[in-house]
Image (cartoon, rainbow, N blue to C red; front, side, top):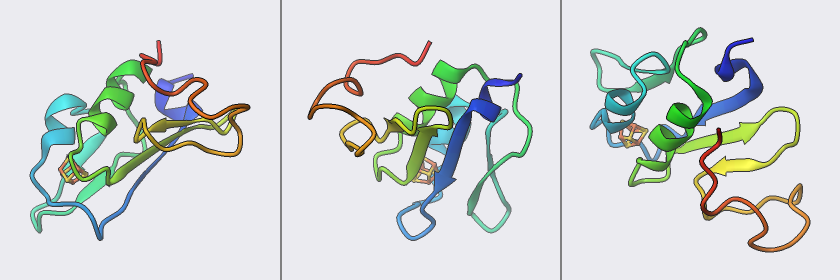
Length: 97
Ligand code: SF4
């Protein structure tokens, strides 16, 4: 199974600047359209850690990455979800690998 299949990756187009930073970090996952909007490719060979780091590289926190199995929010890394047992218990410092 490809890493992308274990993640739910979404982009908030309202926040996206279209600078393509995420595309530079994970070229197989994020694609910049001619009109400057970013989309998530349906197929990707990027590794899990690469996808998460690319999402975390977004200075607008426009990319959300959630572990499909656990519901854990992996990016943006400062956002906590109800799936986590305690505040601060897990997301910061994770590499995703
Ligand atoms: S890094 Fe963030 S702001 Fe830049 S293109 Fe990607 S989603 Fe948009």
